[in-house]
Image 1 (cartoon, rainbow, N blue to C red):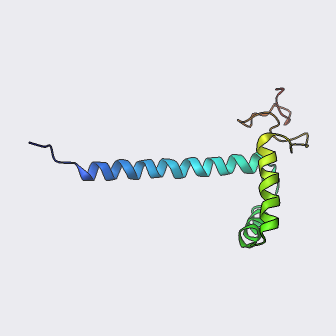
Image 2: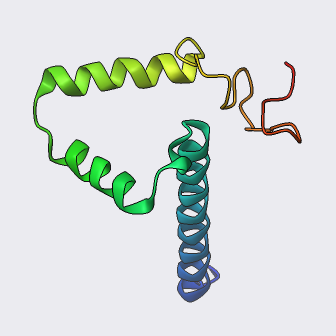
Image 3: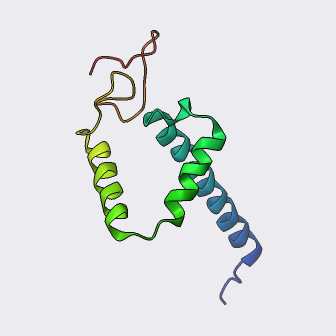
Length: 101
């Protein structure tokens, strides 16, 4: 005879997995804000900029932002002395700069 499924425990496991994924997403967004040095902005300015971005429907602007973002992740757009040049984990030195690659 087949063993009955424990739906409650399966739902609980799925809910825990969803919670972990949400936490991971929030952490990655925070790391992205730090890596782009946007953490130097006040929260209101950053929120305003994100709202403008989300409201923009111009495909040319979106494509331009996409290209800049892609270049950032490929490491070709990191021109500042600050930030996380060449480092995916965002490690910085004690003086605030990046650790040598």
